[in-house]
Length: 390
Image (cartoon, rainbow, N blue to C red; front, top):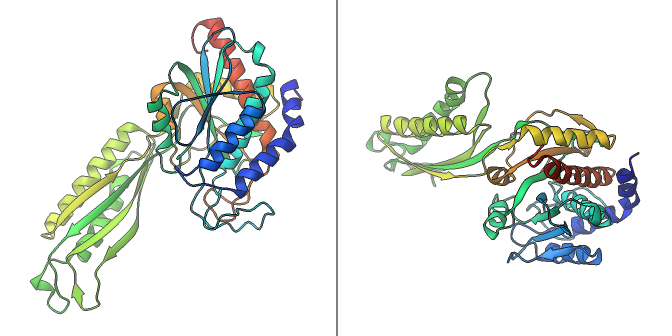
């Protein structure tokens, strides 16, 4: 076991205590006031300086920089989900209808551990490590808010993670290129002309029109996206009508599109619009499309992915190349501003993200804390020694 791993193991119980405290008190996006106060208290108790970026929720803190040098950042998301917990854990959520069902409590506790470890080595750091405890990831708004506040100013590389229940503890999922999908939403209104259900010829049926549109959309990916590329269109909700004997004037359906490259993202959205409007016109109806633009794909830089794999190996962790996840992540916005890497930390959990019985193995806490401490410290050394990222 490396010295850093041993020190991380020494604070394992403290990290578990923090994670459980956060798990008991989950707060939704932009409501993370108690979470923010707790993070600030834990950082202050460790003598870690907190930077003021004018955030309502979320915390920016720094370690190092005593002798100048470059800046790298480590990010953790802090918000929870509107889900009723069903884990039966002794530290289950105390707030009805709110739960850390995506493991952001784990992310926060682990990155606090990274800050604690690096604080002990502060005089040895060849630059500054900035910690971004980010709100509102679940709404895909927090990253842009931190960027707008200036929290990424001067940052040469940014590192982040998501826990991965299907990877064992001690495993780090690392790959270059796309690792999480662009996540766009859509709402389509199909406008027809209402009539009595017994005389459909007197109207324009938005339900039949919407059904044909939804069916036609299934061909967008299969006939417009190459076999070696990837995309998903899912219609998840459809509403129309108000009575059994009336054809209404409007049908509304919505859903999501997931893609892994900007080229495919643009192509799929263009074809989506063409299909929706053309099929609606063929039935004499009108279609209105509202886009709910989410984060772009998370695309890792190759050299930072290699650095992450080395950091894992140095700590005795196993680096594996994971399959890209079709879930979205607003960490993508940071990677539009600077280089970096987003990894999957193995947590060996019984359920996937957003499940009401989601849980994870807390043995992964010291591994994650040590991993990011090692990666950040090595990154500062490499930037200083080579004058460029790796």
